Length: 337
Image (cartoon, one colour):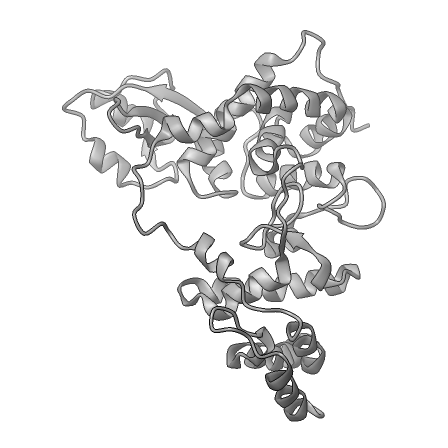
């Protein structure tokens, strides 16, 4: 790397940072990363480090990533109230009405109902209104080089982000997103964007920041690629008896692996065919009885977007509320012919 040693010496003098923040290009991990991308992906290490020399590690990003020092109790009712509320439902109806034809096309092509696509976008960014104001380059680099707990994951995402920027002609220093580097209306991580995002408005480029059709198509394709079953049930409410082996059912994990008939025979009550494979979902609220549901394959698919049963249930219930609030006018139909 021509002149790289002189370049690093210069940024070390010119870009000295306070103890709470460091110039990213001065970090040994960043230098090794740039060298690696030069060898494997054809980037110029000196150019990458010049970009990084304009960035500081962001302590706020680390703070937001860390779990709270004194974590509160998990509460399904408190979590649910953030998303299943009148404004988000009303705006979801409006979003569906404004983009009915695009949503119908996505349903026809990928089998994902309109209300699920709308609800994911509603939970993620309030229908594109809150997409994040962190510099994605800075956030990902901070986590890649200063957050050992998940450094490997974020180095991969930083690489994917730089590849995405090069492929699409974006200036990576100008792109904004979440503190974790999620992007655009549907909050895709860069790796997911490169794997699953699509041009759904026909302008020959993928733009999840500004194109609602691209966001809609990309959410639908993400779910379809992760195994969405068209017409399949998502979840059904359940009641358990005091003597039911709840802990062993929960220990089976989030992927549907339990035969519903076995749970029914052991004292669980639910409206479900015995041959279905299910997972038991416990929605805990302090000082209230735990709410139980059975999740099927489509519930599991929603957790591939965010690996939280609270998240997936919020998407499901927001979707149901939005569909129930739609005017009586039938949704737009789309023919693939």
